[in-house]
Image (cartoon, rainbow, N blue to C red; front, side):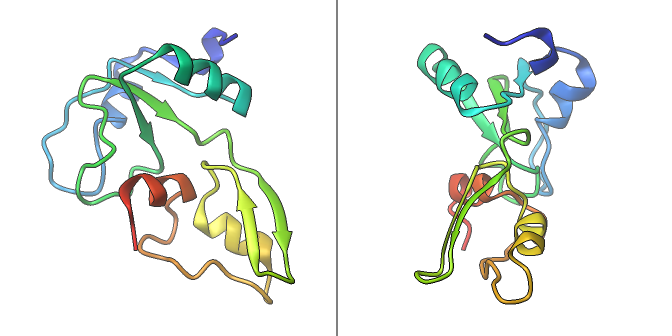
Length: 130
């Protein structure tokens, strides 16, 4: 289900997923996987038990660093799926960056949680950002 275009074993990719904006000591991922859709994500989740979800690398506390695990990079799963202007609810995929989300929402709407301007929605959830 995943071709080699979705998997990175090179040192640069592995080390990048062992870093964030904090001061933790870096430990590279064993492999970096970039699913392109929800089906691939579900397929991976059912088969792998040592996944660490990686957002934009903007965390300060190291919560999502791979530390030798398989780093799951959701940056390719990044669509705005639905905006309900009556209820004020937006549905997006985990790899959606906050800057892009607010640009797509336009002048009438914004996503107010902004601990890191260009983090991802999934990264906010994984790190319990407020």
